Length: 162
Ligand SMILES: [Zn+2]
Image 1 (cartoon, helix red, strand yellow):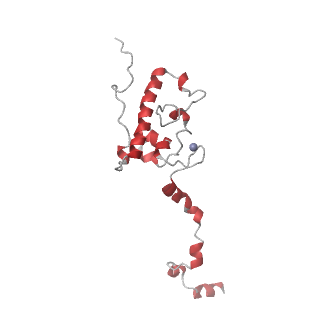
Image 2 (cartoon, helix red, strand yellow):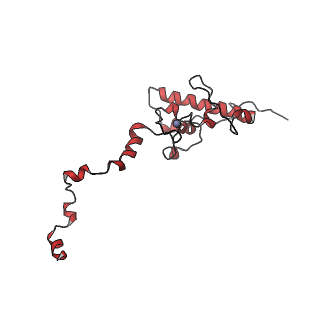
Image 3 (cartoon, protein in one colour):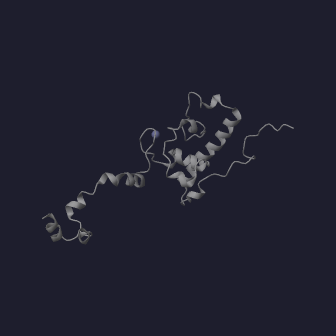
């Protein structure tokens, strides 16, 4: 009996392109929304859950411009506000950024001064690069975002023994 009924119904595939209006309305919105959120609103901070609204507030892009993150990994890595990654953003010395203080092991006041000086130099330049990118009247290619690699000329002068 079931067999007879099935034979009487046209194969499902022949209806494939016709979606009744009710079925269209029930396409689960939840499955679409996370993707749209990433495109339309920018990324949410992994640490505080709020949206990262600007590139000059983005830990991800700062790490990209200073060469800590490959372009391929840029959109796969979690986003954070700069303030929400204080062990990095404590090295930003710029009037546009409120200084961040880290307590504990990553407090730069506890670290090797030479390392700290290099961090300040590179991360501050990276931060300023974000502003340049943000304020550029012409779009800058993503591949041109990163600042040049450190060379010995720009590094703080190390003691030249010998
Ligand atoms: Zn945050």
